[in-house]
Image (cartoon, helix red, strand yellow):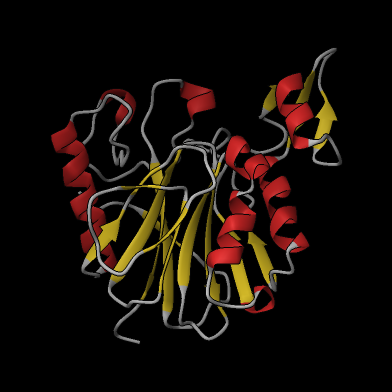
Length: 240
């Protein structure tokens, strides 16, 4: 089955394309049904590989560069597709190369410049967001922050994401937290990430407003425990 993808509508130049995969339309079964793109979650590797090939075909590009995401702040430049790179953000200026981050509640961000000459992806779990992955990505991109725009894909929303004091303290508290219990808070991670981009002067930040835990089209670790991963994919279209 062809993977189901959501076309990202974020006002990007025509040369920049981005999609977000749902869990529908793939080879995986059971907890990973159907379009699991994560290689580290216990799914049959052959099925994951088949799903990834199908997503490459859906983009119409030469290949997808995947990341070995570690909730850190490393950013890589991609000039050719190769094995997964240990990083949580990537960017390219080369048409024909798609970049992807795999998620199941974390915030996936895709970014580009106003000229449509650079595209990137950022994996924003709470650790990475607190640890500076947004700042690192904006700093590394070869464009001024004011010329950049970002789209934040489906992620767990502030109503569904309850965290303990360690997260609250490391994130510094603030308006993206709401008290839930004696020592717990509801954390609006997408808004926290959006504010990091905005504080850096990024020209436009578009929020999808979709929650992975609320919407069963998406994988959610918080909802399901062992489960698959969706992906945000961005590329510079060589045909534009």
